[in-house]
Image (cartoon, rainbow, N blue to C red; front, side):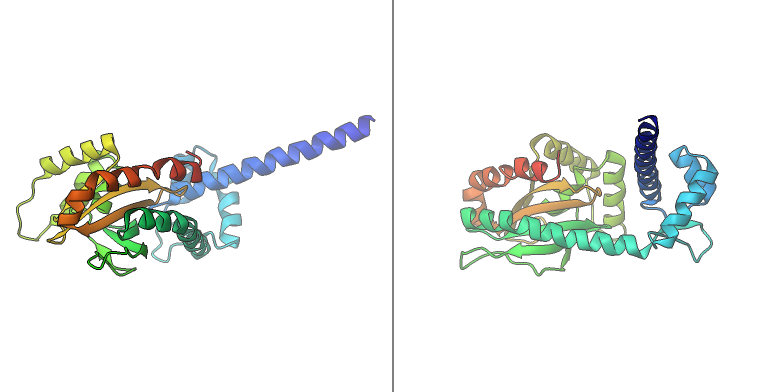
Amino acid sequence: MRKATRMSAAKDGDGRNGVQVIARAAEILRALKGSHGMSLGQIAERVGLPRSTVQRIVGALQAERLVIASKAGAGIRLGPELHALAEAARYNLVEMMRPMLEALARETGETVDLSVMRGDAMVFIDQIAGTHRLRAVSAVGEAFPITSTANGKACLALLEDEEVRAVAEREWAGDGEDHDLAALMTEIAAIRRTGLALDDGEHTEGISAVGIAFSDLRGDKFAISIPAPSGRFRSNRPALERALAQLRAPIADMFGR
């Protein structure tokens, strides 16, 4: 009996060690997110682990191409296999969201868009066209600016103020127009309170939109928006806002939040 107990305890210990290694590997991958390369020492300092432990885990991750050595000599960065997995997950997200988008389009009769924040642009990754003869339609794969669109402003509201200012300054740099950063920050604060972002013809004259945003489990920022000709949008705005707001709970359930 004692022997069996010792064997069981050993198996339990192996299981705990395995879980710990996975958790540490995840910490290292998160530390590398957004980095163009970090040394083993930098990673160890960031995650609070001994350098030898980091080196061992990084070696295992390299074998699976989840991390690679930067060609520029800048250390370790995320690898192609991780990017491939991320793309597969993104495709699954589109499939997961499609029934929700279709139901919203049926309820409102308007076009419904799903977009993702990529760098300093909103990229459309799915769309359900509305049933009205006069409707707003954008091509999947098309990139829109962030500060003048409902989907973009909804995603900005998920960021810290410093990040919002940085995105706005990059987008506005060199366009020769006068922009009011204080007004944008006030609008972002209001979006955080209501959860709804508006574009009243700012991006495209004659087209208005309302949008909500959410983060997936990787932290990528997505938005669902309803664009429509401005006259019809203003008449139906309360109903469109209610319909869109009703998606918050199922989206939160989808990502366990």
